[in-house]
Image 1: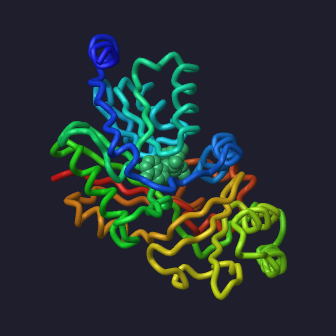
Image 2: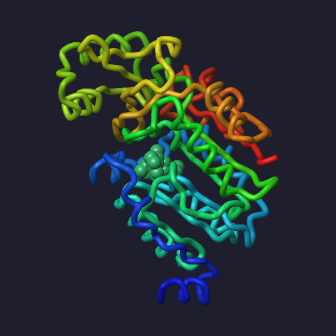
Length: 322
Ligand SMILES: C[S@@+](CC[C@H](N)C(=O)[O-])C[C@H]1O[C@@H](n2cnc3c(N)ncnc32)[C@H](O)[C@@H]1O
C-alpha cells in the first residue's frame, strides 16, 4: 500500500499489486545461472548484434517522451534503459531474479531509476490492465519460450505471448519483436575456413554425453572460432544443424551465441508473423539485416566471417494493434 502511494506520487507509476497466484504460476523458469547471466550481460548482443541488430531497434525509440512502454523479457535492462533515456516510463518484466537485479542496477547507474519499474514475472501471464501501454517490445525473448509449464503446450506459447502483448497495448500502439534467424548457418569469426570450422565442430561434439545438460553446455562452449551455431539432441547424439529445414517448430535446441550456450526453442520467422497476426497485430515491416545491407560500415565487422554478408542472424518485426 505504502509503495502504491509512493509509486503514484513520485514515480508516476501505478504500483500494481503482485498477485501471489500469478507470481507462482510458472514452474521451472528458464535459468541461465549466475555465470550465464554475467556472460550474457558482458557480451550484450555480441559483435554481430552490435551491427546487425541494435541499430535496427533504434527507430522504435523515437518520439518516446512520456510514453508508457513494456519491455517484456527485459533481461539486464539494456532496452529499458534506452527507452528511459528517450523519456519513456518503462515497465521491465523478467522471469530471472538476477536479470531484474542487474536491470535495476543499470538504471541506477544512469540516474534513471525513476523512469523505470522492474519486476519479476512471467510475460505469458502479465498482470497489467488492458490498453495500458503505448508501446511494447520483446527483444530476443521468443526463443526462450515456452517454459516447461503445466497446461501450456509448445504450440501455443508464442501465441500466448503475443496475445498478452496485444491485450496490454493501446489501440494503434506499436510492438517490436526480434529473434534469432538463419539457425541453419554456422556463423564464424572469419579466422579459419568455414569448412575447417564445421569439421572441427562435428569432431568435437561426437562424444558428448547428451544425458547431461552441463556436459552439453561445456562441450559446445569449447568450440572455437564460432559466433553462432545451433544443435539438437537426436537419437542420443548432439547434432550440428546445417539446414534450418531439419528443425521442427517449437523444438528444443541448443544455441552457441557470443559468450555462452543457451537452451532455446525454434520458431521460424513465418511462424512468428502468423502468430502475431493471429493475435490481432498488423505487420508494418520486417527487417533481415546482413553485412551486405547493414546501415553500418562493414569494416567494423572484423570478427564476422564471410557468411555474414548473406546471412541475417536476427529478424526484426514491427507491427501495430489495429
Ligand atoms: C536473450 S534474453 C534478452 C534480454 C533482453 N530483452 C535483451 O535484449 O538484452 C531473454 C530474456 O527473456 C527472459 N524470459 C524468458 N522467458 C520469460 C518469461 N516467460 N517471462 C519473463 N521473462 C522471460 C529471460 O529470463 C531472459 O532474460
